[in-house]
Length: 169
Image (tube, rainbow, N blue to C red; front, side):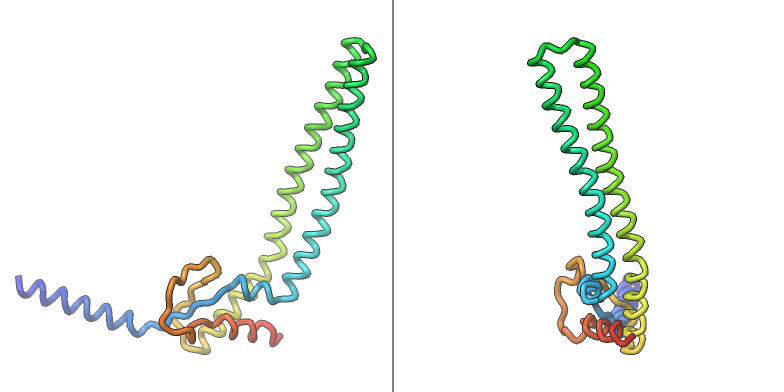
């Protein structure tokens, strides 16, 4: 029994020594990305795309409102059932087109965002790797989601060094 306890103690001591030698840094990738001009360019492109869709959606909303008013006027004016059904179908088609346009806009903007940010994220990862390697870090944790709850020393935050590395280009 003593041999088992001694063996476990030595194993734990060896593991703690091995882990104690690891150098771990942390970085906030969102802060880094926010400082890059490429991010501003991507956001501008996304804003322009969203503006185009917003105009189409606004036009469809106005058409839908016009059909609603026309339908109400036809009811008051004593329109036939066939006329009302025709207007109802036209209204439903506009509502469906509105929903499809809105859905397409959301999907395209999301897809375009991923496409525009991918090269930026890859550049940031490469810069993190270069800084980590130069400073002798074994691992880097991304703190942009607040995952690093506590650290004994802020010297392990390499965010500023990565920003400097990114802006050297």
